[in-house]
Structures are given as structure tokens and as C-alpha cells.
Length: 147
Image (tube, one colour):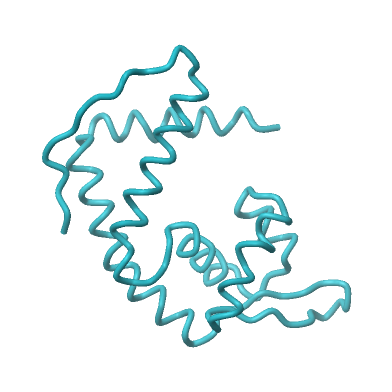
């Protein structure tokens, strides 16, 4: 497991939005690095876990559950379909396409979860339990801005 032992604080921007975006990008890069041995990115693991929990699920419903737009979801689904981790099939309603995990997708999740759990522990160690709890509450509050 990678432990974060030192860090250099970077100058903040007067723009809160930019600071949040920078932190989001750094966090994503950290998780992607930790997940690298699994072959998945954090966005892909998140998508696969949503599908596992909700399958079979229509693309529009999945986009809503993940709180992303349908175009972004379709763009993120394509590489996972291409490597055989998910399948997209016609639903009961011919206008709806349903997303499901393949067996390979289930295996990929299990493999990646080991590295994700290590990343979670490293992040908790880095921030400390109290700061992490505050951060999660603040992030939920910021997400509530979305209409």
C-alpha cells in the first residue's frame, strides 16, 4: 500500500471553484495510480459498481443514479463494452437499452476493490479521521448545490 508521507502545500487560488477542481483532479489521479495494477480507472470502477448494484438498468436510469449526464455515461460505457466488462442489451421496452455486468466485469471489480480499499485507507491516514468526516460532509453540502 502506498502511504502518503509528505506533501507540499500549493498556493490556493482566490477562486473556491478552482481550488475544489484542483483537489478533485489530484484525488482522482491518486486513486487512478492506486488502481493501476487492476487495469481500471476510478471512474470505471465506480461505473461498474453502480451497474453491479442496479442491474439490469437502463442507460438513462444509470446516468441519473450516477448523477452524470447521459452523453458522459455513453462515452464512459464504450471502453468497458469494448473490453467485455459490461453488456448492453435491448430491454423489455425496445426504446430502452439495459446495462449488465459480464463475468469479466465481476472479476474486474473484485480485483480492483483490493486496490480501492488500500487507497481508502491511505486517504484516511493522510487526512485523518476527523478531517475526512468533515470533508465528506462539506462535499455533500457542495453537491446539494446541483439543481
